[in-house]
Image (cartoon, rainbow, N blue to C red; front, top):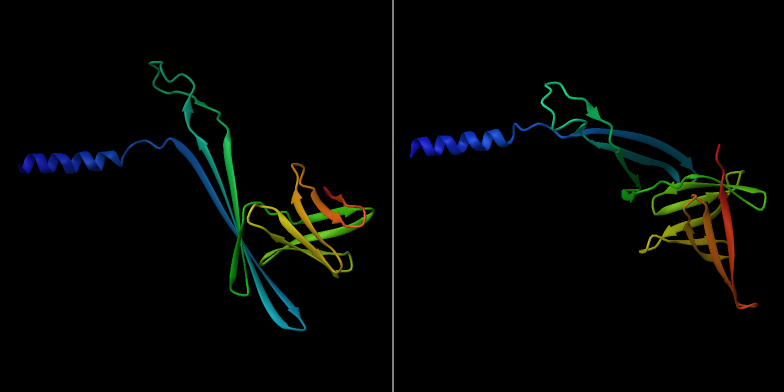
Length: 178
């Protein structure tokens, strides 16, 4: 009985000593921004975790050679961004913060605690973008509310309803690649 128990324990320990078949690289970057305005001082904490996973495969796995070459395999990269402001944490899969152009006017879209804020070049807040349950956004400016989403090129597309013409107007904010 003692031999069987020791054998089972040895078997369980050998399961944990198997060769690793993945290369995993994880990097966490934390940025703390302090904003001072008329309402006081606020801390904005942005934590971005980038994880790269690559499977390890051998070129000649069936050969009898002792030292075998490793085959290059695709790297799967996942990035998760968590923004904490005013005690509220918002998790973002893709950060869409960038500069965008619409009709010659340049806008800055920056991450906020509940979505994104859009600013003019003079740092005046132009609009807010709030995420909906189906990964789209509600765009709210002073006198305009629209439905928005980011296309495959990273551009911000807004769709607004014009009740005078009974049509949907599509505006595209082109992402500036600097």
